[in-house]
Structures are given as C-alpha cells and as structure tokens.
Image 1: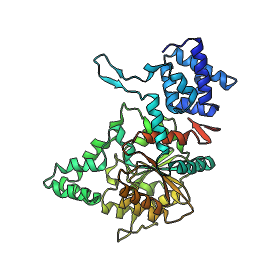
Image 2: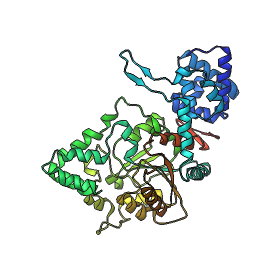
Image 3: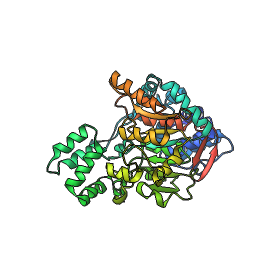
Image 4: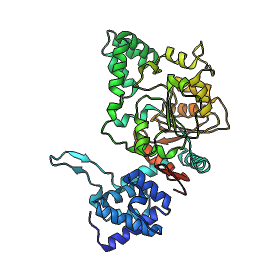
Amino acid sequence: MQLNGIQIKQLHHALLSAFPQLASLEFFVRTELEENLSAIALGSSLSEVVFHLIEWARAHGRLADLVEKAYHENRLNPDLRAFVGTFPDLFATRTNDTGAVVESRTDPDTMKVQAQSLYSVADNEVNLQFLLKQLEITGSVIPFVGAGLSIPLGFPGWYDFLMEQSEKTDDPRSIQQKLDRGHYEEATAELLSQRGYRAFYDAILVTYGAHKLEGKSITGALKILPHLTRGPVVATHWDHVLEKAFEQANLPFDQVVRGGKADFSIQGLDLSRRLLLKIEGDVEDSANLILTESDYRSAYGGTDGTSIDFSKPLPRLLRQMLTGRSLLFLGSNVYSDRMSWLLNEVIGTSRSIVHYAIVQEPARKAVYNNCVRILGDHNIRPIWYPNGHHELMETILRRLASNISTVQTGDDTKTGSV
C-alpha cells in the first residue's frame, strides 16, 4: 500500500478521529498490531504519536495492516470510512500462487451492517449500556468462559467428541440416546466404562491437549478477553486456550487452579490478581478432571447430587470468588441443568448483583422466550448476537474493552478512557 502526501494527511486525520485518547490508541496497537506503542512511536502530543505510527507502518510494510485493523476497530467512524473508501482493493480476498484463498477480508459496508445488527436485537442496546456502566465503575468483570470460545481454534464441542468416541464402543446407540436427551454425564460415564480409563482419557488428551495450540495465534473474541479483566477468570473447559490467550496479550495468569486440586491452592489466594480457576480440571491431569456425576459429587459434595458442600475446597473457592461480583458468561451453555444447578447453589438467588451473558439469539420465538426466562431467573442480562453470527462476539467484546477506564499493557497499568 502506497500513500502520497495528501493521503498521509487524510490517514493522520482519520486516526486522530478514531482514537482521540492516547490510551485507546495504545490498546489498539497492543491488541491488533501486537506492538508496544511507546516502543515504535514516540511524541510529545497525540498528533505527533499518530504521525510516527504511520511512518513506522510505512517503514515496516504494514500500512495496509494499520488501516484495515484501525477500521475494524472503529468501523462506524465516518473519517475512517471515508478514507478506506478510496482503497476498494484493501478488503479484497487474497489468494496464494495456486489460487487458493489464504485470507478473506470483510468489506466496510458488511462490517457496518454487522455492527448495527447487534443493536436491533431485543434489549441489546439497553443491556450493553448497563454493562458499559458496570465496567466504567469497576473497571472489570469476572469472565465465566465455556468451551464455545475454543471451537474456532479447532477444538470439537463436548457433544461432538462424545459422539465420535461412541462409535468406538460396542453399543454406540445407548450413548448417543443419552446425549440427545442432554444427559452428558451419564453418557460420559458409560463411555468411560466401555472404553476403559486409559483409552478414554488418552482420547481427551490427544483431542484437547496443549500440543493442539502449537503454532497457532489467538484471534477473535479470545484475543480481546484478556483486556476485560484485572482479576479472576473462571473456565468450564480443560484445554489451554485461555492460558495462551493471556500469555499472547502479555497478561499471563499469576496462578492457575485446576478443579480437583483446589485444596492445594486455596490458601493464601489473592483474588485481586489474575487467577484462572478451571472448575472441571485440566486436560494434562486426567486424575482430576470432573466429567461424570460421581466426579461432581466428589468435588462438590452433597449426597443427593442436588446440593453443594461448601466445606469442600472447590465450592468454597468458587463462592469466595463469585459472591458479590458480576459475571460475564462467554461461550457457556448457561441453560444447561448443570450450569443452572451451579449458579443456584454458588451464586444463589440474590437480586442485588446483576450478571451478563453474551449469547446467540435463538431462531425460534418459543425457544427465545424460554431462554429469557432462564437467564432472568439467574439475574442475568443477555446481550444477543444474531443466530449463526458467532463472529459478532468479537465485535461486542471490542466495544466493551474500548470503554474500560483502565487499560493494561504488559505489566504496566495505564488509566484513561479507551
């Protein structure tokens, strides 16, 4: 991408319009260009910093990258829209020497429609404003992250994994019927019995192990997530996606607590620091994974399977972390019986603390109404994205992250409007 003097002035103006505060520009450069702004563009004013950023991008062959990603971050900014409109090829599909597609970029009009579509869904605009206000006051929420965020990186959902494993048993139909009824823990227990301990857990390790992330870069919603929190994160899945996402953002967890091993970690925890609690364990430690009904009883107590023994380490830590704090559910099946049980027991029915969930809007009205009821019963305000458009979760998280008053870059904490 080549720019003449007039175009450089136009880009300079557009970037100042899109990033009116230094903190917002720092956040963009860190998360999108994966650079430290202070290391590549110094200046005594924001205008000077922006000019040096453009010069750095020119010198390193990243002008197109700068323009495209700045627009992606501020797709409704009129000055950026006007500038990118003069470069129609910027958003074209790229191919390699064989003609195969290697990168497909979304055009500005499509991105505008996607962003606007979020505000046309139910109570999204109101609920987003509530959450933005929450972030403005506290600067953070506790992300409650499910396996849904791992799927874009090539990890299968638990249903798909169990269905595939059922084909390796003598009675796959029995397992599949349990899955179709939503009885995942029963299906898992039967698979464990039919396949044997070692074979079953080796299959989990091969499918979800840390080696599956080698050479992969975290993108999309996961890339933004580390900038939404300064404290604990709760995960219901056992892969290492969150660890990699936070490390890639130069915001690694200070401590990782793994399900069944909570008793070794609970003493002396500082819940104001970055702590990852993997409530169902870690893929690299099969002995402490929590997958079946008997596993849940062992970890959470309660002889009838419907109550929790808060003298046990994991429930005690969960309650300590979550009581009185707002949660943001991402990629979690908040409608499942197990999740409802956990929310009721750990968080309770308090109406004083409101939680949030970014969830897919159901296609059918009857299902939508039922989902609204379930979420409402748990004091959760939903932020919907249109059915099938999972990529819009990234758009929502960007909006939230850009409004957090405190932006962390590496080990530094910088205060300002983002």
